Amino acid sequence: MKTTTLSIAQRALLGTLAAAVCCVALTAGAADRSTVTRGAYLVKAMGCADCHTPWTMGPNGPAPDMTQGLSGHPQTMPLHAPPPTQGPWIGGNAATNTAFWGPWGVSYSSNLTPDPETGIGKWRTEDFVQTIRNGKHLGVDRPLQPPMPWPAFAQLTDSDLKAIFAYLQSQPAMKNKVPANTPRATTPR
Ligand code: HEC
Image 1 (cartoon, rainbow, N blue to C red):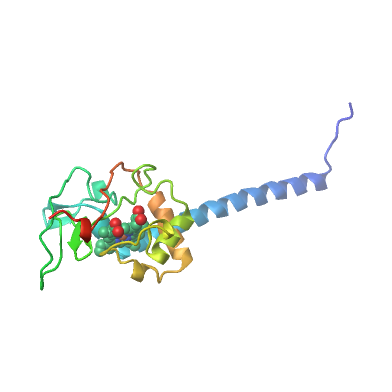
Image 2 (image 1 turned 135 degrees about the horizontal axis):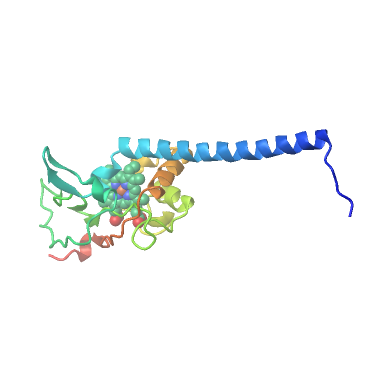
């Protein structure tokens, strides 16, 4: 069998190709990292944890408990029916700042960690972008209730929304089944 020997030029070409493949891979890794870093910056600056992380009493008063970061209203905290909405006070929130009542009924902040069953682990990037753009669960389902400030967040660019999603997906998954929201008409009194 004839052994093929590579010319110096062929070796040089292969070397260049290998280097190019390696650098493309490195650049892609760096791009992913900078997307996640951008997402982290946006999530922190836009206060997602204020509503999506249960608050507990700390040394400086109530604050989001980041050991439960972005896991939504705790499934272990059942709530009884809220008072009727009578002006001028027509709404309020639970001590965890993860459940809210008002003229729309009761809403519970959702689990934004990548748990596949109780969080957004099965969502595609597009599902997230369309949810925020349209203010509807998965972009097409039921309208999101207050106080989720989706009309403000819908002003973000696609690349910022994708960065937020990339960051959320990079968080530790937490299993926490948030209760379904209850529209006012069916809110128990
Ligand atoms: C002022 C409180 C508040 C803030 C701040 C907030 N959210 Fe929400 N969010 C909620 C509530 C409450 C719901 C549940 C609404 C419902 O059930 O209709 C919700 C729902 C969502 C949903 C929909 C989940 C689903 O299953 O359809 C997504 C996605 C979401 N929030 C992402 C975010 C992100 C990302 C941020 C920060 C950029 C953020 N939220 C900031 C209160 C808030």
